[in-house]
Length: 296
Image (cartoon, rainbow, N blue to C red; front, side, top):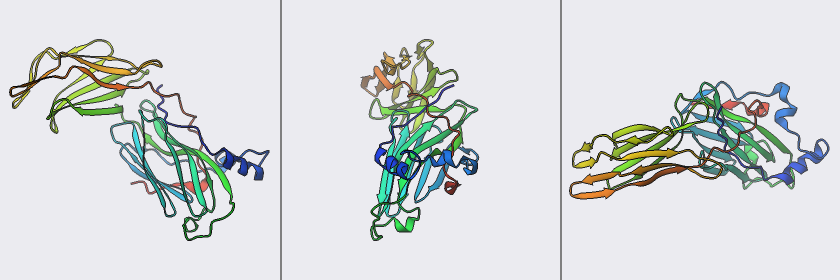
């Protein structure tokens, strides 16, 4: 079972301690656990590629799930404040967020938990919110409270069905002025990884092949499109990532001819890290007031 987790430790210990003073024995009450009997689960799994809105008052989270790559883009709205462009993917395991306006603030961590098909993947959140739950009071013109209620929360912001073949990352870069290479790292059942290697002329795919750690793949004939020729004889191999080294896709004797110009594009075409450690179990929900809404 493969679990892809993207996360970082929550950096809000002071806020948690303040909540605990009002709760039990100096520890912040975990709303998701304390109110488990009435917790609202994140709803039925959506499809990859969905755009989901989730309310954890006073904030609103908008999550865009990539349809083909293990990647989520999140925007957080809180009163007049916005934190956008939070990209959570395989190469970026740290996804903290912190947003505040008026007397309100929210700080925490988001984690992307990716499971093998047919399991469900999830975007997990762990954080602390303080101030009024009313977004109308989270503005610069509202009176800033000297102190306010502080609440811890955790659970799945959204769950979605994992595609049969999910790329944990996608690299694309130019080899020449017009020829690009695209590398999809595919996670397979059992933890092994494979590569889908494609060559493009502009936006048009001209050649594609899977590459696994079982052995090299050799281009057995020229690939031609117009005046562009990728010469036969190129060899592609991969090494899998480990705790000590990154995975790599390496090309040897990769020669691209455009008219009278000859380019040797041999070398490392892509590299990627080993998967981070597994995430917490996803069987905890966020508080009842944060039922999912706005699934598009």
